Length: 175
Length: 153
Image (cartoon, rainbow over all chains, first blue to last red; front, side):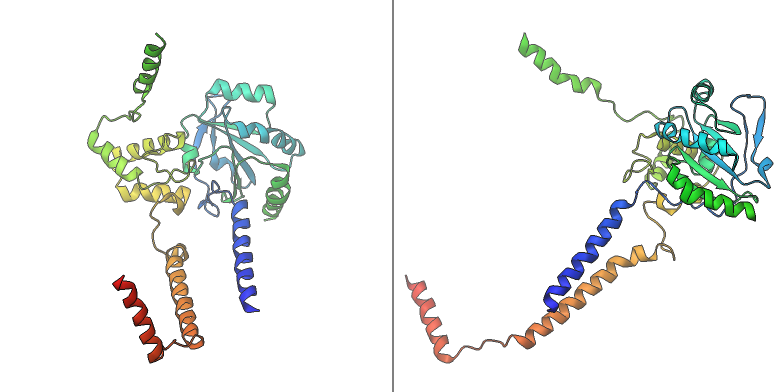
């Protein structure tokens, strides 16, 4: 009996591992920044180069930092989801226009709509680097103390918004 | 004419060979040091390629940041620490042995030990179940005779 069961068990275990392996995305590297204070920065705004945005101003608020660019394809997929989220007024979304041309970034928002409370302009991507950005879009959930609580690599979808981001925001707001 | 055209077409690739993209090598010594360091860093957007050989945008940025930090006097270790801080240990091709990576380092040896143990017990079991076949003197003689016959042919 054992001689039949053992290979079956080994096969099932292997199949299980492979099945889980298929659903993992090798591009998704867990960020070491989750649970750490968000790197402080001051950058000009996209719509008005003279105005500055400082991450220090956000103390005491739960907010989303959404890294995007006009040249990024997946950003267009998540754009309607962000528009929807912005309309619900649950959480302020701050855009970080990453390694973009100012005109292109402004143009994109003019045409597709602007879900952002404010857009920060990171022309050379240095702030993006400090946040460990390597694939746009990326979205950070930052709490009242300025600590990064989650990092989403890839597009925001109705599903990950509902299951992952919104519950976390609701919890963080209570604190 | 057609053949000449074909021959010329065959030569075309030699003209378009791109070669290594030129980096801002105003300081060859530092550039070498940067490349050595970049070889130890995984390109996160292109899987199993290092930052030194990758032409992706992200790798270009990392190389530029390495140059800037080197110019500012950072040591190799400091630059690596900066990268690990932002992107995690998975950016290193040679992750350090510590609590978090221990399973990764130990797994092959554990599997090897397991395999050896299984083999050992299997062999022992087999020795117990399969009796060693002993030839009777007659059978020995017969076998020897048959072999000799073969030799003499």
